[in-house]
Length: 305
Ligand SMILES: [Zn+2]
Image (cartoon, rainbow, N blue to C red):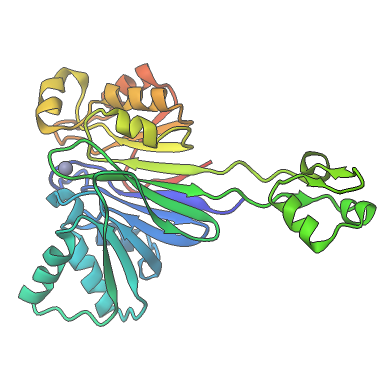
């Protein structure tokens, strides 16, 4: 199976503590490397975990709150110092580019590789990136400022012809292409070749959804439908629901509810308030609503399957 996995670089909310850094995740899909959010100090975890950060192709930034962006000017500056020459594509809010360039300008940092900033529409779902094997879309969440989540989804693979099918039907090149797409071949003489009988079906496509920061919203439920893995913030426990509401964050129960309503296979919760030193209560609360839940523990590698 092709690689599709993520490493949690930071799982805390608001500010780095001795226990957690703030939000950042490193995704490997089919050996393309993607960074989602870039909290302060994320480059330290990238280096400690020996992740190949010079090979990051895309950076996706959910929103402009400090705990999701403060690491970005520094990470790109380090890439430059270490000799990066390859261009990088950054996707995020409109203010992101001026923020990063202002930091570089005021600190006399000259970046010698191409950094392209692409503005993400925070009003409606949008396709950001499409490659031969996966697609990345953004979708709005519900937070104090404009915020988007991201969905990374494998495109359906090709149907594989069984070895004897080609000879048996003397398939033409065009017919083979049709079957590989999973389409039935119907000839004028009435012969039909159904891929369900003569091909091996591709493996089901896997998907990863990142939803942070956000209060509970059906918009995230819609965007997460059927995902293999959903990362949903769970900043607070239900006992702190008033603060969650005021700050437009979620409780662990909210995260469980989204996972349940969206019918995802697995839920991972994170963005924990630093009031919680022991995360087991947050986990238990989410599992009470959606059993297949895990914690986004800093440094952990999670395979999406
Ligand atoms: Zn925020």
